[in-house]
Structure formats: structure tokens, C-alpha cells
Amino acid sequence: MMSRAKLTALVIDLLDHLEYGAHRMSAREQKLILNHLDHTLVLSLDPSDPGTEPLLVALTSPAPILEHLQVGVYRPGRPWTKVVPLPAHLLGNHAPSLRRLFLYGTVHFPWDSSFLTSLVRLAVEINPHE
Image (cartoon, rainbow, N blue to C red; front, side, top):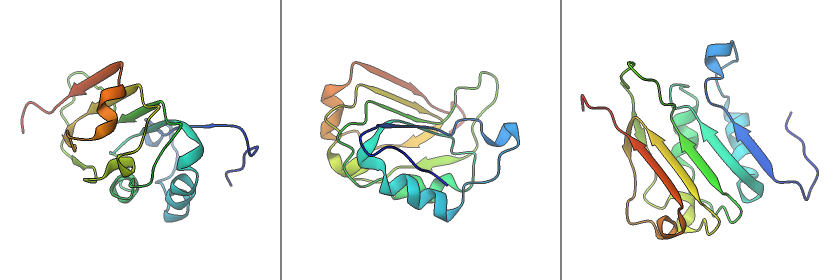
């Protein structure tokens, strides 16, 4: 069960959690993350978890305090086989605090998103085999 103090921002880091024996993300966990997106400071997701894709598709709500978004994990020498879909209106096109965006894998990303202008760091690593 996820719980937090009402004024405390969340850091949600689910990178590599499957490799450490964690279970697949459930629909309930996806809903909890989406319901707390407006209080999330850092969001890091691993699309190799089959439960992550529905969450990525549903990331359409504004994230006013989100500073760091990472989708995928950089794994040298390991090609990505999964296409990562991101919604056309990612974060409701409203993430004014977003400063760091990291996209790894074959990412379908809305490159005309208005929040891209506030970035201070952008890292994109695509699958060279796609």
C-alpha cells in the first residue's frame, strides 16, 4: 500500500524492479501512481515490465511538480525489443517543472510537447535495430 504525508512529493522509481525479484506492476499500483501524479517529483519506469505499458499510455494528467521523467533503462549491449508508446498529450502537455527527460529504447514520443522548452537535460537512446 502506498501512503504519504500530504505535502511530501513522491519519488517513484521502478527501474529494474523485475530484475530484483519484484512482481509485475498491477492495475491497482498503476492507478495509485496515476492518482498521485500531481504530487510526483520523480517518475522512473521500466517498460520491460508488462504492467508498465498501460500506465505509460495513461500518463495524460498534468504533472505540475514533476522534475525528472525517465522511461526505460540504458543497458549497453542489450538491444531493446519493445516499442514504448507514449500518449500524444503526455502529462496533459503540462509539466512546467520538468527539467530532466531520459528516454531509452524505441520511443514514440510527442516531440512537439510544450514542456520540452523547460528541459535542462535530455537524453535519448534509441534502438539502432529499429
